[in-house]
Image (tube, rainbow, N blue to C red; front, side, top):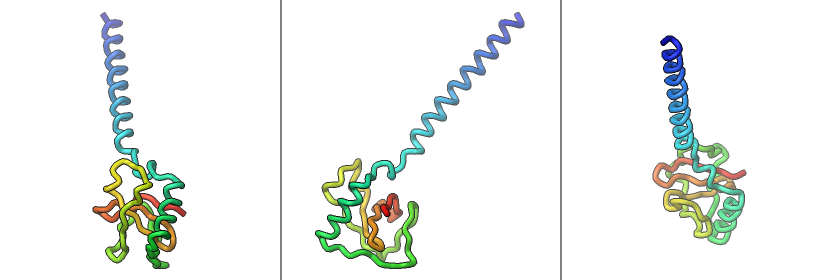
Length: 117
């Protein structure tokens, strides 16, 4: 009888651990997907080239160093992504050039989601 109870308890612990591990993996998959993972170095070059062709000006401010999560001020002009940039939900993002560096922002919040150096 004692062995049966121990096996049952052990089985319960193993089952609970497996379920928790599965939940942890599922949670990690939904929370670690960042927009940064969709941006490539080539896209940064495409944005720079497109901006040059379109004659878009770089926003210059030595005190503004955009980092991921920074909300850009309303004085910074945002541009739609070039058609050559193929990403999921391209309408969700805009870009600008700050201090000669391309910066991708979420259009509705104006938060920086990616930068290239």
